[in-house]
Image (cartoon, rainbow over all chains, first blue to last red; front, top):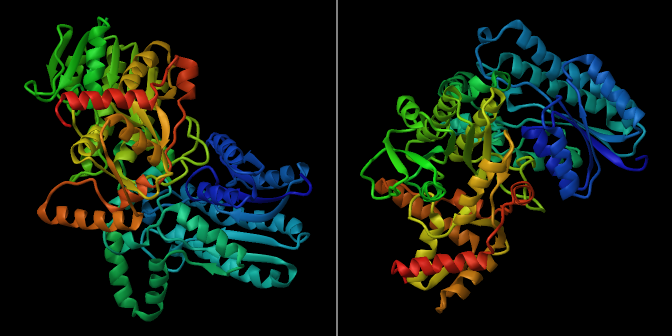
Length: 279
Length: 329
């Protein structure tokens, strides 16, 4: 294992993380995939090894607990895996008014979206510095630029990742580590999201992309050492509109768009697996 | 032994009901229209009027049944009112599962779709492989959620098995679930087949009799909570159309059409249909979908259930004979 390079992806069992894993494997990158216990990571690893010429490790950790971030790092060192690319993807999403969730939820969201990537980056940089080509990719969101209602804490955590990445990038520029951040709009990450996205009309709909398209753009951008990656034509347009339109007009547009995208919860799945859909 | 079969006026459900009757089951079928021309008739078949979305009618029809085959679903890729996918495919399945658990049903077989598994990679997909592309439409999501519900009821103690039917072909009546026969009919009457230029794309084609037998094998030998793919041969469009051509015994022109042209055509067709208010499944999205490999592996069913696959050349021969007898060619 000592001469193989690995990319580590957190939150790799589902959605965008899984798409990133598939994209990296298609580019013959060896992978360390991390996800919550019991999230079906094993079958993904089997699939990747069978279909692509790559070595994979699947490690199960709850990264919202900082001890488990340390544990993950120690495990990688114990196994002597050369992680040359770190992709901080794990996160908790959510579209709801501030009072619709309790403080526990937000605490966990901040831990996973902010604390965990910070700790992991801090730990892994010691290793990354040893390699000539090393990459860090943080997965943020378009919500970090648009201060949308129902995205207060989520948007905040994602804004943190943009600021963190851009600043760290300048620090590490001359040390051979490229830090990038990707800010996707809506994605068809899981059945619940696809279901919601199929019911969105208006501006929001244009933003939506399939995770596999975004994953390709993300890895391309990361390898080209881009600073901020905005995937998709319409998302780039939104960034442009944001710069040129007056604030009141923007707020009118986004207000309308958010109202239209009422969180649609399928009562069925909610009854089966409240945990997953709460995310 | 009493069995209830839903979707008995559909393509697969009709055959399931007739096969169950042949196997000396007393077959309860739950149908919306007792005068439907598509009803299976056999002395062992008892008709119940109702709808899977109506819990009371489900309970009445399922009373005293030991076994359930739940094959009813909205089996198409789009509908004007997309909520029917959820009310029928998901809530309907929940009603069936609820009733089965309450009435102490011994075995429950749920007919799911290859659409839940999605496109394949280098090798045919098996039951445990992760889905590698995003879910695309309400049909896929509704069948996925229905599967999740079945698994949930397994955890609550129901003995349920999921079987997966891919693109199914073979003699049977024409309806939403039977797009293959519509395609064959067109080829036979036009003596022309339009082959997409991406003709190396592979998909799985299961013979309807295999799928029906597979349901009963799963019921007899399947393990609770398990999923079994009841597939057929994986064929590229090229071999698919070649085999059809060979078996018609007639001259059939194969015309290759580039993907872009298909997309443009489908876009215009879709727009015209939207204008006149006609429901259609043709859209540029469907063209993309048909350009993805969708190979499946039935190895698990073969190994664990003793499932067997009718070679496509034999299956298609029988199908074409059937269509010829119905004067389509």
